[in-house]
Length: 240
Image 1: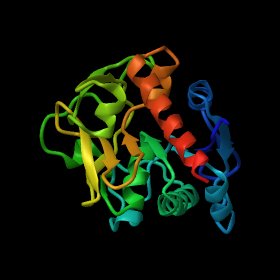
Image 2 (image 1 turned 90 degrees about the vertical axis):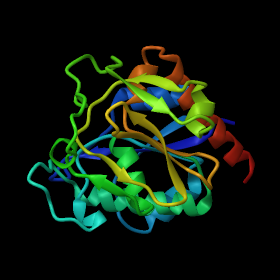
Image 3 (image 1 turned 180 degrees about the horizontal axis):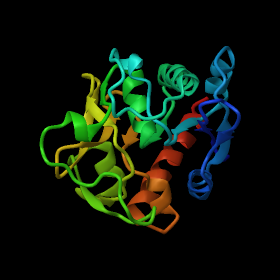
Image 4 (image 1 turned 90 degrees about the horizontal axis):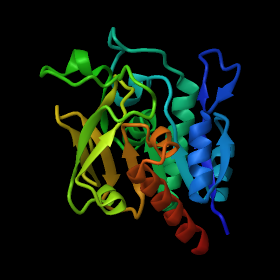
């Protein structure tokens, strides 16, 4: 039976509507999951979402409120939506508690790291001293604009069988540090963290890029990532 995958939604600052790109939905569907778009509702619904879902897919969107990692706003901080932040942090914690698979992309990679206690740069260009690549590409969404070096033997390496991935890039925030139970499994050539994963869960993976765009253009590594996620969700489903 196809697993039920919760997909987080972006929201506007006034909370008038929720949005999810079609590529996110289609990447989950094509990999064999049943995509369900989640509204950012804070409260007891989170517990019910976590129990019903076989996996959680954390999508991109606006910046993350730095109060969540004990910082005040940098002048380069963009738009934040605190209700979404709170919803996702609570949901991530519940899914991890239940041992269910999580895949986070772009903002999703960062909020995953924050939820477990990691740190984030509010703006990589203002807060990292060395010369950086262009991480907000001026190219089509699915274009792979730079490379990521993958840690041998990591989950990301096992999924893709690649030690160097070509990825797209649309971000100005990025993970700064991870806790002991997580590892950095991919970096850009300039040192920016591009992928993190849990060392104690079977599938908890965060990617700084947008594999959903690349999967829709038949990029094999991206397709393998989504397929691996759905396969992990199937195992989870069969275990209950």
